[in-house]
Length: 209
Image (cartoon, one colour):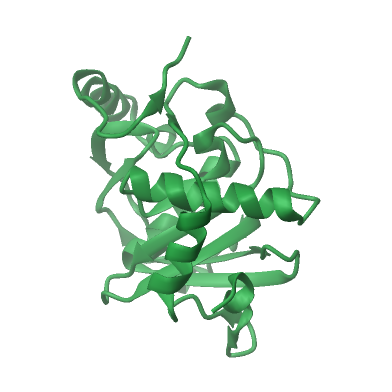
């Protein structure tokens, strides 16, 4: 399937991101070059990113590099600012709780507010490539809908449950300047930063000055 294969829709609204996952992810990754990961404290992670306004080959190359970087760091989602790029785009290669793999790209994502009857919280552990070696429990809704644009600029919508829902929320947060630890209590955030300070990332990172 081509890069634009994810434009196929289900229910005339949501993209199909579960087909040909291996082939699509490999095609992105093999065209790209892995870049080091920015870590907590880097200014690019703590501000809202710029909207994507030009959908061109430069954007496509960035996405290729993001997939390569995601695989090198063994992640399931990656936002552009995690490789130092100030643009609202994230990629994902993530399993949901049913073991179904999802692969895709979202530009200019907006997380849809859920009605009260859909807000079932899941307090599973969460981690982040930009906070290496650290984890903490964080309650998030177990269902998420993100609306944005695809690589061609056309509107898309992505939905996820369980772990994949957490991924969609986590990556959208990144692009608005929030890391998951910003949603923790002061005590839990202190513990996470201690874990990070005591650990050693298994992938290349950008040192903070």
